[in-house]
Length: 602
Image 1: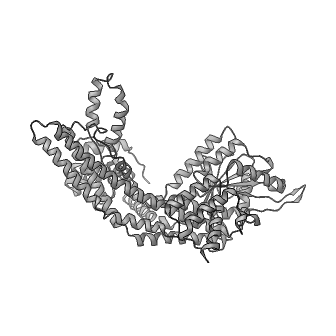
Image 2 (image 1 turned 90 degrees about the horizontal axis):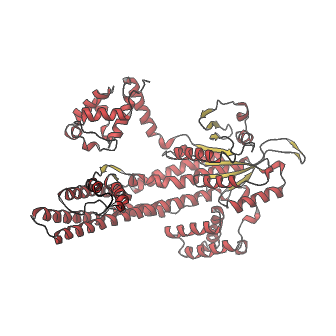
Image 3 (image 1 turned 180 degrees about the vertical axis):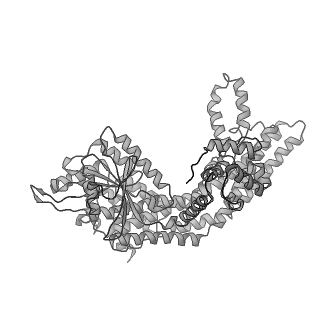
């Protein structure tokens, strides 16, 4: 493929000089600000093709895909000086990738970390039942800090993408932490659930008998980003009592939200006899739970990304701050306390509109537009025009949500994950599902027809009329300006009311969907023989099997379940209560199952 010869800065300068009438654009400038783009799209395409030497016909340049100058130039740079065959090949790959994003090959992506000598390589060889990590078989691909291996099990056809890391020590913990979390962030940006990092295995040598403080801190940080499984390796060198004590220490210092599995990765003769390999099945089932927990955390947020992202078309460039800052230069000593206000005003004056921006919609004073002179009035009208366009697009988007089609797509994704689970564990997960999230999505869709959107437009008309009254008067008095400021405040309140309500409805959907998916994932594994679930003492037969903290949770849950369902708000309260009481998600699920089986199915 031909070498790319332009930087973005060079392309931006060429674009501004040749297609932008000499005006200097930024990467955030909307294409609608470019005169040629607005006046004649055919000519614009042709000039763009000539300027960057794009080997595509003009009608093949997908102008409608881009909203900002930067987005368009990124696309142009990638195709500059390429042959026509190379361009078409790239386009077909893009389309293929886009079309198959939700249908990529199922795999478990796992990062393995731990101290040097903790038995990571031995465990990985045991996990895939092959001496891959010892002999180098399989051509490892080194990507900076990581070595990653893709392995497909011949037994069940499951693919594992394993990311091995350097061993950590007290002096290298921060470096490892940054590298691992950076990799998780990078992978989790994808819309494809099989590209995310699902689980982190932390290998700890059980014969060391005590986990160190720097390891505890490291694990706690990782738990915020992914499901962590602590693997107590070399369990054949430790007594059962030693393993139990180590688990107690981990539970005390890290909590019950982390899974702990003891494994023996190699067969060898010890003082206790010949050790046998064990623990692999428990680890693999815990890995699936990591995939599902990541799905429940990220997927609901991705579903709403189209509503919460910044709108590049609705960019602000208000001059109030700029004008005031010039005056500020003349009186800097007298206005030293305005530095922070100027900074805040600039943030609100030069940005892209978003739902978050509208929830904290600025006052005229924050924008330094409260003097209401001619320039201020022009900026206020511009601000309201762009805001009204944003609100109109938001209303249209909400009305266009096809709840049934979206839900069918979601359930198809769930089915894909369940099929993968059955392939991995040879059993079908039990269905445990409410539809509060679907109800929340319906409410979000219906809000698009709310009268508040029309009321916001009406309020902006009142502001415009008040501003026009000021413009029509030779000598406007204070009352006219106060009326205009009051009209703007009413408009601002209406904008904030709409955006905060939409944000609330979105949050309700995300929380409900996350809660349902999380419960579903827990339910999938409750009947499995995970090590920490196989002991008879873990099961609940009567209320006497609960400790004091669990009884408090049990009493609250019974109260919430009186009407046989749990609202989104109640589910949030329960989850916070569970965390504060130190009850693991799996244990909380058992308590809820006990209540439902004993009281609600009579």
